Length: 484
Image (cartoon, rainbow, N blue to C red; front, side, top):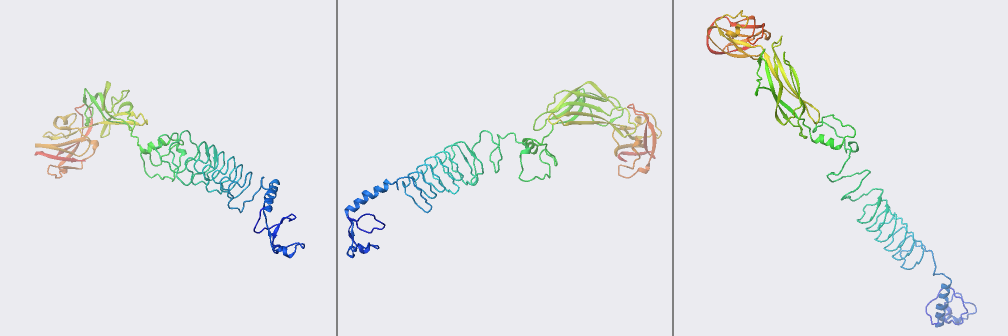
């Protein structure tokens, strides 16, 4: 045994036959057989070292004290060098790379390469897991860097603030909420179900089958004015498409139109001036102006033409003629004859021509009409003949006929020692004033007479008021005004 120097603590079993150079003064419990001079020193020699290496160490290994499975409580250990633990261990703190070589359970932080097989890791307190730690199916609930998970997993990202690119390489189910960063989706193929909150940017060109009942507004809209084609208070039925609603809001539908109805005969328009009673109208054609609707650009359908108010010749005709934008000429066959041969009590009467059609889009009824008015005429002039008791058609012999509806009339009178006359149907009532060409009121210079006459146009026995100047007079073209 080689020589040893230094101190030795602990117990030693043996006969000490080879121990030399011992300072027995350092022995605290020297046996009574040791004499005082033995306290000087005990010098270790080469034989003692060789005996320790050969016998003691081999004895510890033979007893299995160091070489098999152990349990280590690393609760207070801050660092365990690589290779110390060779088999199944339990640890709860920090294990550097390579410490654990098989199935482990850990709850803190594992450096790169620590775990080589299937494990279950509770990363509730883990702030970072370096790339490559987990090589197979795992369950985790916190932060996984790029490439950590290589197969199908279920991840609860309820507490995850950021997920780096490439973490999930295959089918994944995300069951909670992604927070922190905005999510930019380049494209989504297939179907998507569930709810979506937040903002969405895109043109929505491929969104279909969205119902009005499936949309929610952030705030209630208070309708206070008409918008597009929607009137205040208008409602939509359940299931109305969003597109239909938007079209009504943004695009006001404008129905097609028909207008400008005009009767014709022999290629010429029939006058719409006021007509004397018993002046018939013969028509073989009518024209009508048409516009298309917007935005569908369709023209009206189901055109009809009716005449009403005539004492003879009322009719109703239907036409299947296709209408075009602009003026349409439509033949009436056979010719129609319309007339009013008397007006029992009213001041005037009308024959009303009405065209009707239907808008092909919304079914609205379109119409346009024109009146042809009939009256009994006015008479005015100057003559030396006394007509205060005239009958028959005498007035038409001496006076000028004026075919107009009731109202103030201004007429030119010329007289040479003649009476001045102004007559009209008595149903119009009395005149209020008569003024001469100098705008002087000359009402008191006229007398009113009631007569019953006939018209040269074929009407009979109509009561007239005839105003005649008291005396004959001579005037050179003055305009007299007769006011009711």
